[in-house]
Amino acid sequence: MEVLNFIFRLGVVFAIFGFLWGMIDIGLRLLTASRPRTMVESYIIKGIKYLLLADVTFLFCLGDLDKHMIVSYQVVLGGIVLLMYFVGKLQNSQNQAAVFKMMGRNIPQAPRLSFNMKAEIGVICGALALFAVLWFYPWLATNAASKWFHGSILSIEDAFFFGFIFKVIGFFFILNVLFKLVGGLTFILNGGKTPAPNNGIDGSDESNNDDFDDFEEVD
View 1 (tube, rainbow, N blue to C red):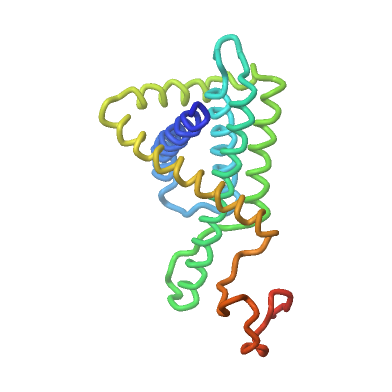
View 2: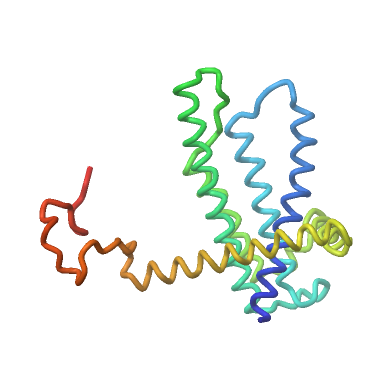
């Protein structure tokens, strides 16, 4: 139960962090409203966002912020949840890029989404590397920016109305994490293969000999 409570707390933290960063991002866009962002600018901003999120997540894994008291299981669990969060964001960005690319083919005036797989993986690896480094040098986590986010998140979390909203988001976050864990375990138990529907009664149906079996590759 303690593990689930911690994952739920991280879900709330991620949701509030996303809200706060969204406000900052709106301000940055207003300052550069005359021109669109380049891909380099987009990934620099995303890199800063992910590094800050890793830093703030680490702060919530500490038992005592002032004494930098590390709670080992929380840091390990926090790193796993952070990885799952980043992978989910990567998949969403990849899907959005595919949709925008398809729109661009049909509608020349449609907007295009900046997406680069190597850059996405680079910013994720950088954030996870920082999270790992903070384990050995926890005092690096307590800087002005991360402490501001930490305090702001706690304030919003304690607010009655907004706190309730973000706790609802945290509830769905933990459900998503559990579904992914179950899906991953199922994938591993099946030997790395997605279960296919069985058309035969006893699995020995010979009536579809012309169909592709599990070991054939289709280009």
